[in-house]
Length: 536
Ligand code: ADP
Ligand code: MG
Image 1 (tube, rainbow, N blue to C red):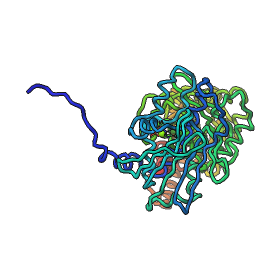
Image 2 (spheres, rainbow, N blue to C red):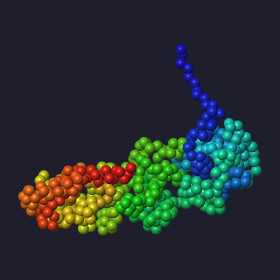
Image 3 (cartoon, rainbow, N blue to C red):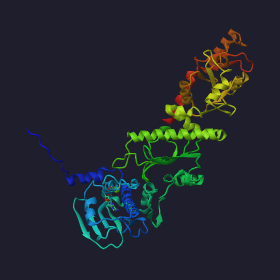
C-alpha cells in the first residue's frame, strides 16, 4: 500500500466541552484568566504608547470588576487595546490561538515584553465554566467600530456592530444557575485577593482598588528600606509576627527569578504560623505549594518568589521536574547560605541571638542537603549547658585535648534534657569536661549527620555510660563499691525496675556511687523515633 499523508482534524463540538470542563480543576480561576487578559490588554496599550504606536490619551487604566446580582452577571472591564470584529474572529473564535503569544513574537526584540501573562490561547474559554452566555463588547484603540460577540458555549456565535464610546473591552458573564455562588461579593473579593493581589495594573472591585501593582519584589533592593520589607511582610501576612530578617532574590541570568524570602521566628516546639511561601509568575499568583521550587528545608520560610521561567501547564500549575525548577531550587539554597554566612560574619552576637530560630533551618538543611552543609559548617553553632555558643571548629578545638577517646576522637558530650541529666552534667563538669545542650526535636538527626561528616568526632550522650568510660583516659578508675556490693545493688535495681537489661556502673565518687546506663545507640535510636513519631 502506498503511504498516505493527511491532516488530523478536530471536531470542535467534542473538544469544546473538554476544554471547558477538564482543563481546569478549579472553577474559580475563570476570574484569574479574565482579569489577566484585561491586564494584558492594558499592558499592550502601554507598550504601544511607549513605542509611539499609540498617541492618544491613556487616561485611567484601572480594570474594573463588578457583580450584578439581579441581572446575574459578572463584568470585567478594561481600557486596554480592545478588539475590532476581525480581531475577535482571529483571537477569540480560534481556540488555542493566542494573541498574547503573537504580540510577544512581534515585539520580542524590544525590552520588557515579559510582562504579558497569556500564552496558550485557552484562558478565555474558562469563562464557560461558570457562564451560560458570554458577551464581549469591545472597541479597539484603532479607529474602528465597536463590536459585540455573544456565545452560549456551543460552537455557534453571533457578532455585530455596537455602540461603545470608550476604548477597551467589557467581558460580561451571564452566570449559569449552578454557579450562582460567584454572584457573591465576598466570594469574588476572596478570589481577587488570592490571584490578583499583586497584578501590575490597578484592579477595582466594590469601589476599592484591591491590589498593590508595585510589590517590593519588582523593585531593586537599593530603592528599599527596612520599613518597606517589614510593611510588605504585614501586607502578605496581616497577623504575622515580625520576621527576623529577609533575603531579596533578584536574578536575571540564566533564569529570571525575583522575590523576598523572610525568616520567621520559630519557637522551640516547632510551632510555625501557617504562612507559606507563595509562588507567582509575572505577578499572577500560582500556588502556595512550592514543592521542588523551594528546597524542602526552606519551605517553612515565608514570602514570595516570582519566576516567569518556571514552565506552567495550561491550567497554570507548574511542572515540578523541569530543569529550571531544579536550578531555582539550588539557587535559593545558595542564597540562603550566603545570607546566613554574611549575618554570621558581620554580627556574631546578633547571629547567636537568632540561632534558636535560624538553627532549625540550618540543622534541617545539614541533615537533608550536602551542598548546604558545605556552606553551613562555617556558621553552624553548638550551644553548651552554660549557654555559650561555638562553631564546630571552635568546639573541636576547645575539647579535643581534654576530651578524647581511645581512638583519639574528640568526644562531644551532650545532654538532651538538662534537668533530668543534671547529675551527669555535674559529674562531667567536675572532671573539667564540657557538655553541649541538644534538646531540639531535630537534634538526634543533626548529631547523626554531623557524626557522619566529621571525622575524629564522636558524640556521646552524657548519661549513656559512666563518664569515665565515655571519655577513656586509660586510667584505672577504682569504684567505691566492691564487686560483691555492685552485684547486689544491680540485682536490687533489676528487681525494682522489672528490667533485666539494666547495667550498673559504679563510679569512684561519693555523690554518685552508681549510675544506670544504657548503650548510646539505644538512646539515640529512641530519640530519633520520638521525632519521627511526632511528624507522622
Ligand atoms: P491568551 O491570553 O493565552 O493569549 P486567551 O484565551 O486568554 O489566551 O485569550 C485569547 C486572546 O484573546 C488574547 O491573546 C487576546 O488577543 C484576546 N483577548 C482576550 N481578552 C481580551 C481583552 N480583554 N482585551 C483585548 N484582547 C483580549
Ligand atoms: Mg489569557
